[in-house]
Amino acid sequence: MSAVFLLSLAGIMVGAFVQAATGMGFSLVAAPLLILYLGPRDGVAAVVLLAALSSVLPLARDGKHANPGAVVRLLIPTLVCTPLIAWALADVDTRWLALVAGGGVILAVGILASGVRWGWLKHPLGAISTGATSALLNVVGGVGGPPIGIYAANAGWSPVTTRATMHSFFIVQNVVTALVLGIVWPSGWQLLALAVGTVAGVVLAPRVSAPVLRIVVLGISLVGGVSLVVGGL
Image (cartoon, rainbow, N blue to C red; front, side):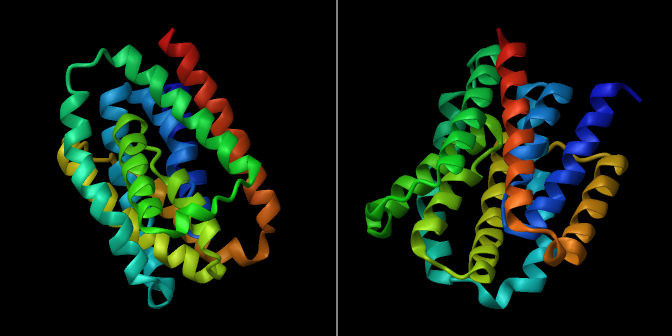
């Protein structure tokens, strides 16, 4: 096993743990490392399928607390934009995709770290903009979570409603994105890493402080995003 492959497995495991604990974060952690291992196109396709799987068990735990209206409002623009964006970027050089994906991760980290809140996101245009931006970042870099996280932060939901609503959204978004981009089936090792991380997140998350998880996610994501940008130069 190569060092890059082992790093990608670590990214999947840590990402699944964070996803189960917070409702998002799998792609922020795993996408940079999987793209380094598989390349921009196959890496993104692999990330979105694994991301969908990473939300299944946590949704089974928290699903009854989801906000279905918000899920639908966010999914409509996302599902409309996803195939259009994929078509528009079909012939783009993969080096440029790596640069954009890395830049998207770095931008996402900056936005999440700033704790920014925008009141206009509570209006219908906010859901449309959020869903479309998430679709763009998901197709380009497999990192569609930050716009949804910002939307959730502005909505003022409880932690359990935030987790359940985001898991519901991400499962549908990532399955559709995987179908549009082309399925890249995970290996047995990748599924094992995903399962270990997810179960650990579900079991141990209540004992881990949110500030510690946040620092870990943002730190790993920033390093991964910078690596992608450097690799694409």
